[in-house]
Amino acid sequence: MRCSDALKTVACVEDKADEVVTCDDVHCADAQRLLDMCENSLAEQRKILHRRNVLHAKLVDRAFDACIDCGHWRRAVEHGVLLAQLLR
Image (cartoon, rainbow, N blue to C red; front, side, top):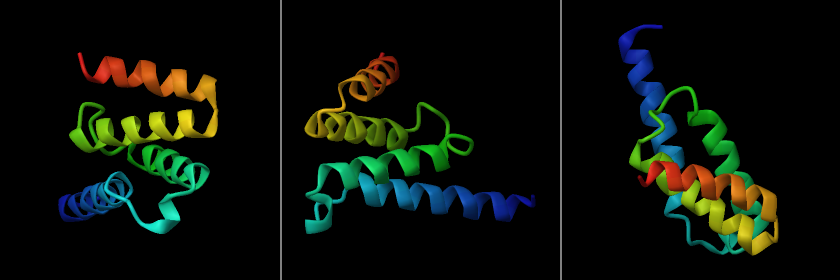
């Protein structure tokens, strides 16, 4: 992969993550849909962004909140543990 292609890929992943983090539209009112968007974005960026990237941390936080809203307690714990590690 050429450097310019890699930069475009990083920019694309960052744009998608930022879109999910800042989402406050009507379609994001559904917590399950928001959780799916967060987890899909996290999966995409896992190999591209550093785990201490601020967008990554914001996305984990948003996924944590969505898990709580949906009542997915085990997934909430997983995201919460990861979030605590990122905030140290």
